[in-house]
Length: 285
Figure 1: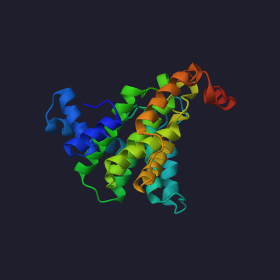
Figure 2 (figure 1 turned 135 degrees about the vertical axis):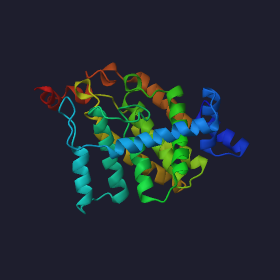
Figure 3 (figure 1 turned 90 degrees about the vertical axis):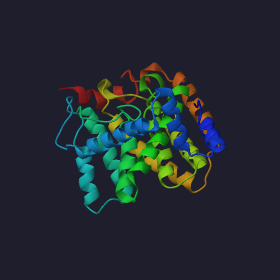
Figure 4 (figure 1 turned 30 degrees about the vertical axis):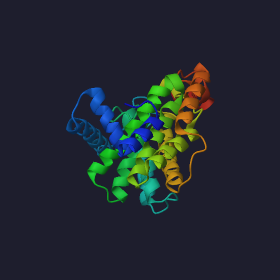
C-alpha cells in the first residue's frame, strides 16, 4: 500500500520493481483480486477509451446546444497541413476535445479521473499509440502509472472540482497523463514523479467556473490544454530536469489552495467565467 508518490518510489526501489508494478500490487491487495483480474480491468478501461474515441460524432450537439463539433473542426484543421503544433500534439488536442464533447453529448467515456477531465489521459495515450510502436500491455502499464498518481492526489488533496477547483480535475488528469507518457518513453520512476509535479504545478489555482453549471464551457477546452501541458511536462522530465518542489509537496499545496478558494469558483456557477456577459448571452434561448 502507498500513501504518497514518495511511498511508490521507495517501494519500487526496495523491491526492485517499476512504478506501475507497485500500483498493480496495491490494487490486487485492496480489491482482493488476482494479477490477471486487475490487469483485465485495466485493459477494459483502455478498450473503453478506444471505443469512445472511435465513436465520436462531430454532428452531435449537447442538450444545451453550447458544445459539440469543435473536435471535428480541429480534425479538419489538422488535416489541412496548417497545423502549427506538430502531428502528435495536434492529434492530442483533437482527441481531448472530442472526448470532452462526447461527455457533454452523453456518450460513453471513461472518467479519468472525472467525467469533466475525461479527455486528457485518453488523448495522450491513444495518440501515443498512433505515432509510436507500442504494444497493448505497455499502454496498460502506463494506465497503472496514471492510476497511481491519481490515487495519491485523490487521497491527499482532491479530484473534485466542487471541492478543490478545476486544478483537482484537469490538473490531476494532466499529472496522470504526464507520468504515463514518461513511462511510455522509457523514463525512470523519478522522471515520472517529476513530470507529475510539473503538470500539477502549472494547474495550481485553476478555478471551476462552468457556465450554467454544465461541464461544457470552459471545461472541454481545458481538457485540450491539460493534455498539451502533460506532454510538455513529460518532455521536461525526460530531459532530466527536476522539479524544485517535490511531487508530494505540490499535492499538499493543491489541497491548501483548494481549501482557500472561494466557493463561487468551485463548481457553483456563481463566479469566474460563469457570470460574464458572454456566459449570460450563451444561456439565453
